[in-house]
Structures are given as C-alpha cells and as structure tokens.
Image (cartoon, rainbow, N blue to C red; front, side):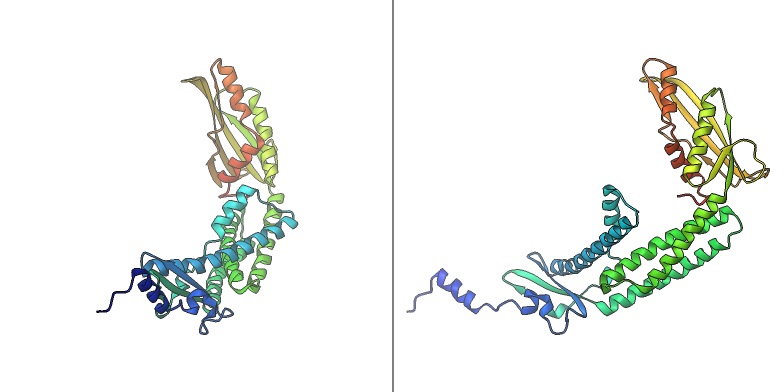
Length: 345
C-alpha cells in the first residue's frame, strides 16, 4: 500500500505544476497586439473579483493620463509665471485638482480574453487606443471651438457694454472649456494642438479689447444716503471711485453729463446685539447711461463683512463697520454686482 505524500511535498508539487503569469499581465506593454506607440495599457488585480480587477485596470490607465495632464498643467503654469502671471499655491492646487480629470474614461476598455486568475488573484488587461483618443478629443475640441469663435465675433460687434459683457463672459467660459480640451489632447499626443494656438490668439485679442473698452468708459459716481452718514459719505465716494479705477474704469464723483452714472445708495443700521452694539452697512447700486430713464443694471453690493460689533458703544461698532469697507472689498462687490453691464474681472 502506497503512503500518501506529506502536505509539504504536495504543496511543492502544485507549485511546480502552476503556470507562470502571462507575460502581458506582468508587463502590459509586452503584448504584440497593443504596442505602446499605439496604445495605453494597464493591468489591474484584485483578490475580490474579476470586476474589481477590471476597475483597477481602468484606473491604472486613467492615472497615466492624469499624470500627463498634471505635467501639461504644471508646464503651463511655468510658462505663465515667465509671462508675469502667477497663481498662489492654494489656487494652483485647486486648479490642478479641477484640470486633471480625464473626460473620456469610456474610451478605456477591458480585453476580457486577456484576463486571468493566478495564485488566488484576478488579473485584468485594459487598453486605450491613442488614435481613438486623439480623434475623439479632437472632435470634442472642434465642437467647443465653434461657439467660442461665434461669441468672440459677437463681442467685437456688440453695440453697447451690456451686450459686450454678455458675449465676453460666454467667450471666456468657452475658452476655459477649450483649454481643458487642449490639455487632454496634449496629454495624449505629447504635442500642442495647433487649433488651440489660433484660438488663444483670438482670446488674447478679446482680452485686449476688453481692457480698451473699459479704459474708454467714463463713470460719474454719486452717494445717496438713507439716514445720516456724515463725513463717511465722502469717504465712501472716494473708495468707490478708487475701486472702479482698480477695475480698469475711469471714475470720478460729480454730475453726469456724458458716459455712465453710478448711484450708490448707502444705509447704515445700528442696534443692540448679543455681544453689545452691532452696525451693518447696506449698499445698492444703480448703473445707467447719463440721463437715461432705464438702468442697465441694479445690484446689491452689500457684504456680510460690512459690519462692526462692540461690547462698549455704538460709536465703536460704527467705526469697526466703516473700517471693513475698503477699496478692495468694494472692488470685489462691484465685480460681482455689475458684471451684467460691464466686462469686469
């Protein structure tokens, strides 16, 4: 009677008979049907299921593209820094997260016949055709380019500032979309997209035109007090004209005979609060051509920051409120509130 082999001998026998991992699962670039000059490839693995391995394989390729997108984005930031445009570290990180997402993940496919199960783990093979990626992303770019070019033309032909501001905002949003599409193309093809250079030239001409139109715009400011503002009204008018000048508009206080009139209605309110005295400032703007019956835009320029609190006196609370009203804070509110009528940035 033949004795059973020991467990160790049995394990060694299984190990000797086990087939090695297929070459393309050890190195996905090794498969002859998916050469690296024509395909991005990746292998995923999971002990849980074949579906999890497939998801991991797709993730591997998506990560390859994301890293290329990151490289493209960082290269652009270096170029902009050399041109004098810089982003803060926080802005750069936020933009990096937003701009390195791949929009065409459905073009990453799994080849079912090339998967396997080896030593208790599932393996999956994924690929993306560089030709298909380039063709699809080029089509995406072309579809976005036509409306962008139309809005640039509409801005050039705009009869007034509100029409120009609308076209400018749409063109700027369109250019942002083109930039994302061009980055994806560059990440895949490893070279700049020629059409993007032409559209960038159009955009720069648009930006220069915006600056010129704003520089030609003349605004007369007027402060209307709801309640007693005292000397603060004069200070507020000065801050308002400074903020408008910072935004690229020529502004000064006084009667409006030609150009635009900006009337700022200010109302300061003070009262008791849980921590003592609290004062807040409400601001409403009315922008229209001089002598016109209808406003181009009316906007609330109030800010939650335009407040002051004091445990001691109303005078201290009011002083704290006015200290929060700066030219920079007013510029922020003007940029948002008047964007329907003026192409402000």
